[in-house]
Amino acid sequence: MSTFTTYDLAVPVLTRGLLTFDHILHKAEAHAKANGIDADAVYPTARLIIDQHPLIFQVQNATKTVRNYVITLTGEDIPAFEDDEKTIADLHTRIQQALALLKKVTPEVANKRAETESSTFNPSGSHPVTLKAKDAVVFQGVPNFIFHLTTGYSILRAQGIPVGKADFIANFIGVPGYE
Image (cartoon, rainbow, N blue to C red; front, side):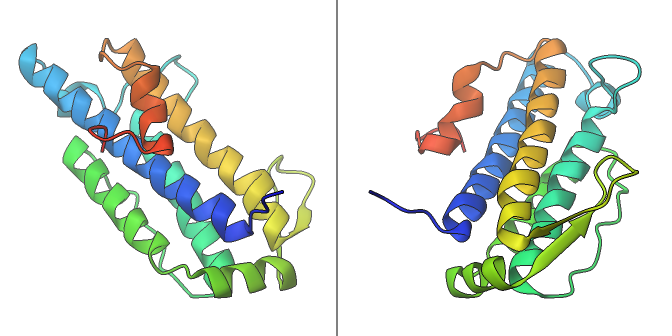
């Protein structure tokens, strides 16, 4: 039976998910160029529904999740992102910054902290939860990240970007050409 460490479950998933986000943003840019659309005027503020946050927020929150869990897994003090992105290029830069943060995580430190540290957060706004760092990463961090990635993907899909399941899954399973 194979076992997975917290590092094994978190860092590759977050890394590959960020690569997926970057990939679908590149597809959005290509689609816009081919169809005479100003990608920066349309996509960053696009939403699925009026009361849901736009694409820019989805990238920001996915990368905030990465930052928060890099802090959890390394114990390092990492400055917050500025949340001042306005263009697709800005979103690519933000994703690259989050990828660079993930490179700071080492299996030895992450796995030790996963077992010895705890994390408190308040997902509902009224019921704070304290979890072992391992559980916080696996049961809150990764699902939250995937939620924002999926929502960002869906926003672009709703804008007519020709992305499909392969565009979402390929980086997770290492299919070449989807970086």
